[in-house]
Image (cartoon, rainbow, N blue to C red):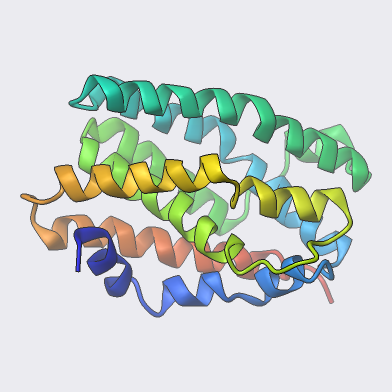
Length: 214
């Protein structure tokens, strides 16, 4: 078992609880309520700035020129098609601009932003990769649960496709390979702590979407 799979096992049951969360079930079926999805998207959008910084940190500290280029290319995806998805979805869900620009941050949103900021400040490539791997691999795994036909509403369908298209699959494979490479000589407990923490936050983040919905 490679390092990434060992870390995923260490993060149980939180990893599987996220991948198989009722939010994911409802999204894949196209049945998630607008109020639930709106709360989720507004909070998820708040990650974007910190995620840009995290990818930028990866560009700075990666020990391989090709790896730096791959991280840099992903920045253009985040600033392009993914950012456009959020704006289009906010419009489709009739979410006023002030609500998605300046929302009150929930506990899991604050926790994950804090974790990304710690990874950035660490200038530790392995630590940065741990946070990136959880954020991206976990989403790939739930998106790979999708079945035909996909939901008809664009805001549901496109969120699934963004996390299951071939380029995203290659991106996650790259991240896992990088973590397996640079983390091979690192202490497992040192890497598993932030991996488990990130997985726990992801589970709380999905829970959060239902908190104010009766």
